Length: 277
Image 1 (tube, helix red, strand yellow):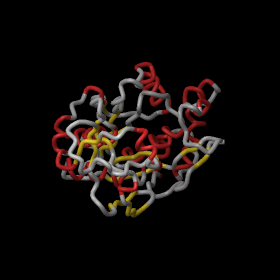
Image 2 (cartoon, rainbow, N blue to C red):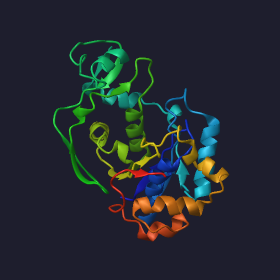
Image 3 (cartoon, rainbow, N blue to C red):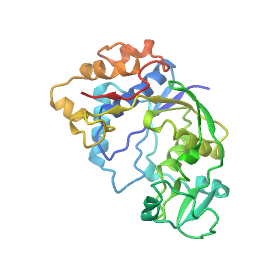
Image 4 (cartoon, rainbow, N blue to C red):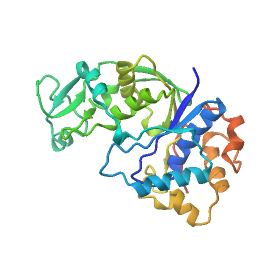
């Protein structure tokens, strides 16, 4: 089977160095395998998505040299009804409020599992026991997905969750490898249930190092100085970006992403968080 990967930005905020690190790992993994790379805008939350941000993301990716082979439909135009129906045996309705969940410590305790509600959010009923998977950087993992609580698949207002959308999209788009940040490493155990219940195959997994800001928090829109647009305005060129990012992936600090393809090894590089100084 040929390798199919994807770049899947969320157009609610500009690209920052954390995004670039994960996208570089995805790009290098596909290019080193002679595979096919897709671009998909993950705009399932249409309230937060912005067209001008989406345009800026494409511009930043091109400026960095992160090309793609095809663009697939954005999430906001997809129909997830078949996936929802296929998952019905593994779901239940939940009427718990955010305040109730917060009062329970922030993790959903399964209050509505056997309540028989006909309205409310649609939650996934996670089986007991750990899930085994192998990450190409972090190695074998055994994680109990119940540590996260039963996730919402469809909100009470009808909005499909990221967890359902991303797995259904990857199956539809023929994605064979998922590359993303290490903050989602253990959450793979949750999404693997969706993969197994919706399809007959599973992807390979590769989690790139988590990038933290100087304050020790995961990079976000609040770290505006690490956005690619801000770096460009500060006089950075793509070579400086790659000399900064590529060592986090265990690669020599070369000035062009294409120069690193032949030396890419998913199993090397930082396993712990890296900090932008």
